[in-house]
Length: 228
Image (tube, rainbow, N blue to C red; front, side):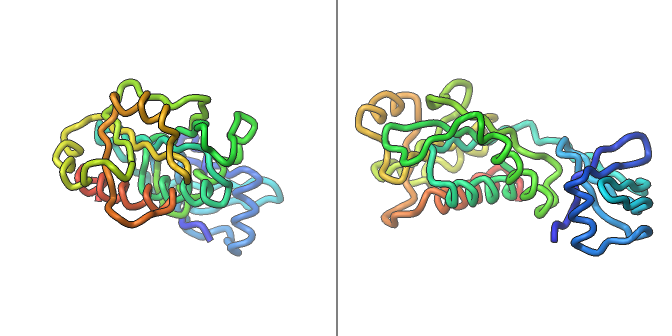
């Protein structure tokens, strides 16, 4: 059961689409229940469910709170990987409050992503935001190549510096991008191309799966940014 529902606000009312209405019925919500909603743009709502139809529902807002962003941006850039792992990655990155997820193709990627899958990815992020009551749903971008512009880039690789050595830098940078390669790592020619524009960091001797690495580093980044 989600901890919040995705709502469309208008004045002092919220409406819920057919998908959210189905969730209301699954959770056995009834008119008169007090529920929590998010709009994906920074506002959470407490509302009283008023109408519950077959394909839509609506409620009256009794409380709302807008959560200001902290002026910083955290992006996770991940080489395309198999769907079960990518599903977990999108879900957990959203729960941890990442601002953007970039998916790109690498020479050693075992899977490929394209724009036709964007709706599927966005749906996972939306459900994760509801579960974690994250008022912001991260933007998801799909690219053929790895974007590197405009951010302090952290590249996860075995030969990198210990992450602890760059923690202070994490606290002062306004825009951060965490880059995670495919399961087999970047090809040597890719490393040569991107390493000059990144700070390479390591999580130690253990070989972590892609989604595990993202969870660990995002937790550290959130701590250094004061997000937790």
